[in-house]
Structure formats: structure tokens, C-alpha cells
Image (cartoon, rainbow, N blue to C red):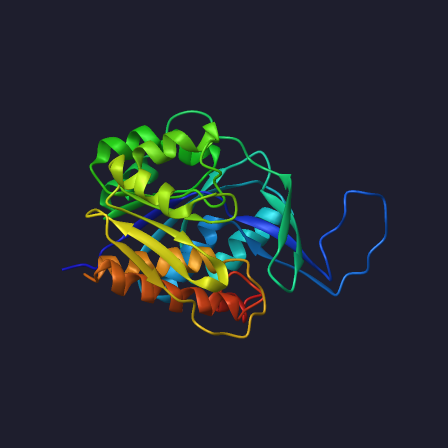
Length: 285
């Protein structure tokens, strides 16, 4: 029997990270960076890296351009052992992330690919049909895949990140979701939001709480909490994707939601200990 497989569609980017003593005020001024580096980014790339490290078969589908950033993205993920399908983008997604040591972040999107033109590639259709779980992250190409995923009968896992509970763009993703993940940055009442997603048909919903761990609501309405795993934090980028991947890998292995949340916390701690999305990249970049 083959191991359960995951299909992920969404962003893989090339990022510049700048660490500051504080986030910039909205006035003209000068600041000195404490550190800076370039690295792989993108929420789908982060999930694929963590799943690969957990020995969960995964296929990543992302759009990249015929540019230097795209070459770097492809090379880094290939060297890290991630199986990927590359769609053509007019340019590769790039971010400038302004960070503080406390994990605060302002992400400036320098370029973002739109959805691909034409028919959905056959290799993408096959990879989705063969997967046990389909993950569609917030971007135009995954949005285009939503009807195909909904018709496949496969569970669809969605990560809406810092959703505020009202933004229109997220709604078709949430409507299709069997499992919902988010963070608490913009939610007035995370537990109320999680309960609303279960009431709408999700099998469970999870909200990460940074240093306070995570909270989840299952199909029975039971509330679950898990603490964060203590770790010396190097960089917070990729921690949420690591948590998502840890929960997914554990659930595919038959774990209960409570057990999967603990696995997610441990997976997130691995990303927190690296200045890249995952330690798999430490020897690559």
C-alpha cells in the first residue's frame, strides 16, 4: 500500500528578509537593519518542505517566471528534495519582509503572478486525482483550481492566514474547505470563528496563536488547545506552514486531532530554528 499523498497549489517565492529593531513608522525616516538575507518564500513552498521532511509524499504546483528569481526558487526546492510541477508565470513572486526579533512582520509584495492562461495542465489534474488531500493556498492559480478540487471528492485543506473574518477573496476557499487553518492576528474572537467554520461544514478548524500555541474546534464542537514547543527562535517565517504540515502528516497517519496538534507544534518548532522556511534549506542556501 502506498503512503497517503498530498497535492499543494500556491505560492513559491523569492524573498528578501530585513530584520529591524522595530517596524517602520509611517513617516519619512532612516533605520539601520540588524540583519538581512535572501531566501525561498511562499506559503505553499513552506508546507511542501515541511511535509517532505516528515516523509509525506507531496507534489507542489506553483507558477514561476523565466527570470533569476524563478531559477533560484526551482533550484532550492529541487535541492531540498521537493517534488514540484512548475507552471509558467509572467514573473516570479517576490517579497520584501520587514521583520523584528519578536516575529512582527510587514510583507511587501514586489511581484505576484496571476492565474495561468488556458486549460489546467493534465499533469496537474492527474496529481490532484491521485492525492489523498488537496491543499489550495491563497493565490489566483489555486483559486482557478477550486472547482476541479471540489469535484474530485478529495478533502480540501485551506489556510487563510491572517483572515479578518470578512474579506471577500477568502470566501470561495472557505466554502470549499474540509479543514480550515488561520492565525489570530486579525480575528477578534478566534474560537468563535473556528466554530463558525465547523458549523459551515468543515470537519475541524485550527487557529495558531504564536507563542501561545494553537486552538482547534472539531466536528463535535470540542475545543482543543496545544502549547507551543519551546525553541530558540531564529526566524518566524514558515512556522505556520510547518504547523499546518505537521497536523496534516499526523492526520494522514491516523492521529486524533489532539495528537495532530502536538505534531504540528513540533513541526513548527523546526522552522522557527532556521532563518529559512525549513532546516532542509540550511545546506542548500
